[in-house]
Image (cartoon, rainbow, N blue to C red; front, side):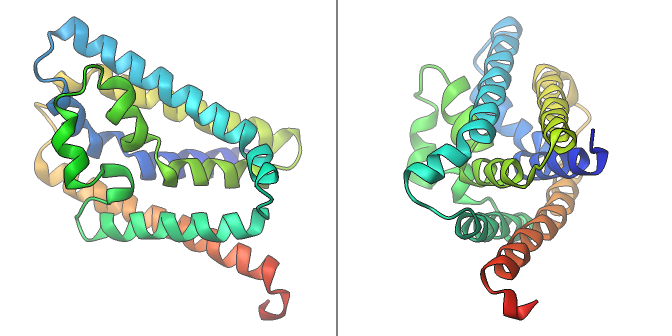
Length: 210
């Protein structure tokens, strides 16, 4: 297994989905539930994210091929999307790409099952996450990196599930300062990953600049 590649995949998913920063949203949308229902919702969110990640990584290439989109062009577009999300995180604001617009947020409290929408999609599994997974899946060459990709996704999903399930307990210890620092730190990590995507795609599309 390629441990470096696995670490990179895990870091990207943790930065872009950031379970710690999104925990208050989960708690807010499940505040009217009892502990059992809250944990059931956390499990459903985790399973939805796991399935979505698997589909994005496995079928991403086929979807691009169906629409006739070149992988490097998609990599460049995905890098720009991820960079915009990272910049929002660094400024302490919320990206509407994953966080939703004010109009969308207004209707979230009336949604019957918040596990699938909006918690899993688009807050966690939004355009930035899907783009990142498709790009990593395309970069994975050979069994070692494919295994690394699977391991990176699996470890993140386990941590996501553990964070959401223990959300009510963690809420007592995670201050606004901790969440703010975490968001900005993950923004830096995500910005670096985005720049790697953009530069890598530009080198492939414009070999003269290399």
